[in-house]
Length: 180
Image (cartoon, rainbow, N blue to C red):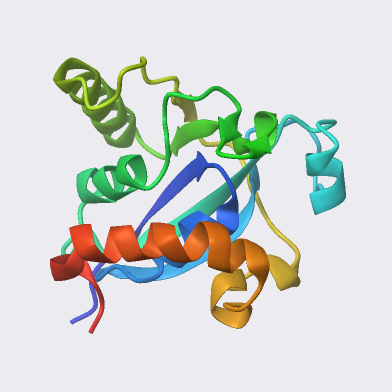
C-alpha cells in the first residue's frame, strides 16, 4: 500500500548541500533544488545570485510521513547548516543563502516554530537562531544542471571541500535514518 506524501520546503545555504543530504534519508522520495521566497517569476540562477529577486536557494522535499516526520526533517535541517548566520552559510553570502522554513500547512508552521524555540532554549548555538518561518507560495525548480549536483559532480572542488565533509558528519549522526 502506498502512503500519502507531504512536501517540505527549506532553505539553508547552497541547495546542492541540502539536496545531497535529504535525498539520502529513508522516507524521502524526491528532492528538487530551486528558488522560493522572492518576487520574480521563473528566476534564473544568475538572477537569484545577483540579489535582484529576493529568492532563496531552497530544496523541495517530497516525503512519506509514515516513514519520516516533518519534525525529523527539521532535526536534520538544523543539524546540517548554521541557522544563526543571517544571509550566509560559510563563505556563501547573500540573501539567497538565508535560513528559512517555508511551511505548507498550519501544522508545519507550528512544528517549525516549536523546533526553533526548543533549539534556542537548549542553547545548541552561542547566537540566536535567525531562521525565517514563512508561508510557502511558489517554488521554481532550478536549472537541470543544479539537480543532483553532488551525485553528478562528486569530484568538483566545491563538492569536495564543502559538501563531502558535511555529508560525512550527517551520515555519522543520522546513520539509522539512511536509505539502504
